[in-house]
Image (cartoon, rainbow, N blue to C red; front, side, top):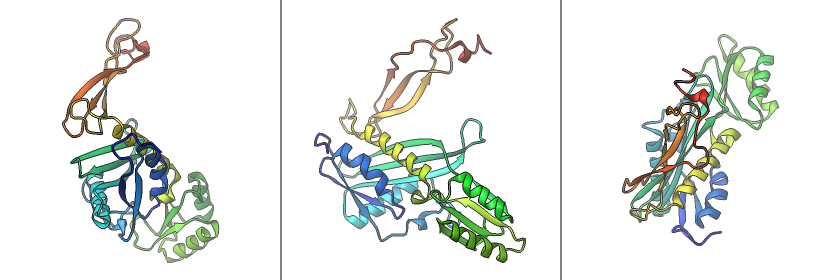
Length: 283
């Protein structure tokens, strides 16, 4: 455990009922020297569910802030931590399932908020079927039973919902029961997005924790507060053939979330881009 960061020996409130402390503590405790205090006694599903019974209000960051503040209020701590995830299509092709994770750190003593981020391919899928063979095929494709599944009778918003399905015998029994309830015999099956139920998402939360750790360990060169980190990549690496600026990044912009000081750091190593990325050589 390090004793060189400003958060050494500090307690940090983490409100979760989905096992996120098991993902975050192994990254942040040794890296910062802090101690993650697991806060319980509040149903975080009331702030929004992936299965649509309760909509999330506001942005991911706003939802994470509410969770962090509730944890801080319940624990009496001045440091709080919360994560919030979202699923949807990938930002490039729009065809792949995608997970975006935001991890918010609140420090009331210093008056700052720092956000760690990660995004990438997700285990996020669904199927409507009346066939047990098709249901089994879906479950195998998504990695059940390590990846939990959720089922509903009839359609995706049917209130007759079954969660925490993590064994084949339970899966078979619930499928048969829901199929009998459904007017069409069809059952809506989907992946469970909660952290304890989705191994792919847990890995993404760990990546967001790594990003947060790097930011908290980097003081701003202007104000000295933690959180200085990369906010965007700057395109324009010159083509190796003709020198035209390409879509490839040549530098990164870093910014302080507290005083807004920023700086551009050029990337080292690669000085030119492949002509395949050039708008002139490969229009």
